[in-house]
Picture (cartoon, rainbow, N blue to C red):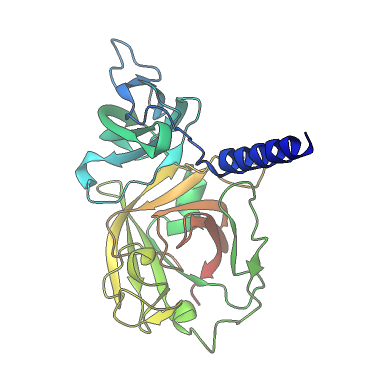
Length: 317
C-alpha cells in the first residue's frame, strides 16, 4: 500500500510538471485594419451666403471607423503637400481645428485609424476654409513703424532666449539664457537682423533676414528647411545661411494660449523656408506674446515638436 501511494505521488508530480511546462497560448484576436473610415468636416458658420465659413477658420472634424481603437489627425495646405504632416491624437474622434492662413485656402485633412496590434487605415478629405483676420493697428505699427523697422535679439536682457514645454506651460521653465550668454559660442545669434516691412500699396508684409555670421539653429529638418544648413550637427552658428527675404502674414495664433498669459493671440506666419526670427525653428508661426514700439516677446515651436522657444527682441540700434 505504501508503495502504491509512493508511485501515485510521483505520477501526480510528473503530471504537474508536464502541465506547468506547456506553452501558454495567447491570442490578440483579429488584427485586421479598421474599415469604413469616414471623415466629416463642418466649416463653422457655413451657409448659403458664406460657403467657406464665417471667417473664423474653425472646422469641426469628426472621424469614425469600424474596429478602430484610436485616431491620429494632421493637416496640410494643398499648395504645400511636401511639408511633413504633424499628427496629433484624437481619442474621442472629434476635434475643432482653427486654420489660420488668411484668405481662402484648401486644406487636406489626413486621418489614421489604428486597430489591434497597430494595424491602420488612412484616409484624407479636402476642405475649403476662409480666414478673415486683421491684426490690431497697434501691432502693425509697433512691428513695422508702418513702413520698415529692424529688430535684433535683446542680448543684454536675462531670458532673451528660453525653452519650455509646448503644451501646458507658457513660460520658459526649462531654461532661460543669462545676458550675453551666447556671445562666445554663437555670436550669430546677436549679429543677425530682422527687418519687417509694410508694403502699403499691396497691403502686404515682408521680412528680410541679414545673417553675416550665419544662422543660429540646429541642423537638418530641425532647422525648418533653412537653406545652407547641413544635415547633422549640434546647435550653433551655420554660415551656409547668409540671409533671405520672404512674405509674411498676421494670423490668429494657433497655440491656444490665453490672452492672460499674456498673449496678443496674433502670430507672424512666415512664407517659404528661407527666413526665420532669432532662432531657426521647425514651424514658421511666431506667436507675439507682447509687443510695444521698443520690445517684442515671441513664442515658437522649437526644433523639437514638444518644445517652445521664447525670444526677446528690441529695435536695432
